[in-house]
Length: 534
Image (cartoon, rainbow, N blue to C red):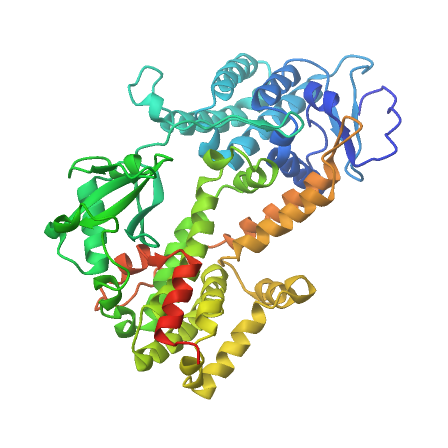
């Protein structure tokens, strides 16, 4: 389009010039699905090689002026038409302006709340909105785009705290990172409504995982833990213990989570009559003697609650979190919060399975527990929750559990056969072919095994250079974006409104706040205690 000659392409047509990308922007043939995919690739991965400020400035340069970038619809080639001969007619100009607005719409739709607090974007949206207002009279075709842009501004303002609000300092911020310079800016302090997993230790190696908001009080946390360990709340206290041994008892209205998040401390639950002891509970006290509540819970209901909880975590993950996790391992915690929650949950479900079995001293009940977990794993698979499915199977295959020969000998043949079938899906041979084939056939919504998805993205990242001769290897970024886009297919639909039976009203807190032992040595000691080596 335009009269200038097309410059010769680079010998590697899949690489874009970094300086060119910061100077000009995609404003070409957004008519084909190929071009839309290419745009999506760029928006998903631009933070790898340019900042949001760079992108905003490039867009502003593109909107009022005549230089533009054409994306060839047949190949990954680009060229700059700065040497465009002749004057653009009105249709060309209006088309170019609309494509800038189209890109902004796609950008804000893709990033959602990740961009609502970015200062560069706020200023950019104001500036380009004024430009559209000025142009709408000369180019009436922009009227529809103006209405769409007003919706974007409305959404942006609803998610933005006033600049002079006292709460503004508590909002999270989104910043970009440059792999080449290897830096990553933090998103800022946590929002009071943000939810995290908080570990409340019962013994040195045993804790209850509590999902709660940062603003949750110590009294609320204590109530959850007391319920979990079946101990009178009035006889317990929450105490933060530093690694040097210094203790601080939390008062009922204290913000428990902010105290426990200090890098040099842990949060323990203590019996008030034993607050001077090193360990609040001994490993063989009430914690182990609690009733095995899981045996009285319907397996489908329990699996369904696991799936509902996992879905809430999975559905909250931004696609960009996988990009941050892959390209910036150090300092990316603020930008991978939702992803980290799901990964932590997967690990805790695995530990929970082992903990429940190894804390059960009676052989007959232990056999029932193993059968129960096999059925729960099968139900998770049926509910298309492969994250908890993998975690439960791995928990049953933990060395401290798999060595329990007396227990496994008493498992009926049909359960052993079922477990063997379930295990086959976790077989890592041929790059997890069994899992990939089965998961591909499952309709959405579905929850993937996230560690394997991250492994795929990491494999692409580590096997291909991001920059070659100061050029961006866009073929690599396309492969990563294509893998990340699989999240959309998994979330095409929402899970149904099926809820567990009302008779198990305690099921939700039981599943949401798992009691686990996170020390492998402690698990092995329990294993040898209940079934000593012959």
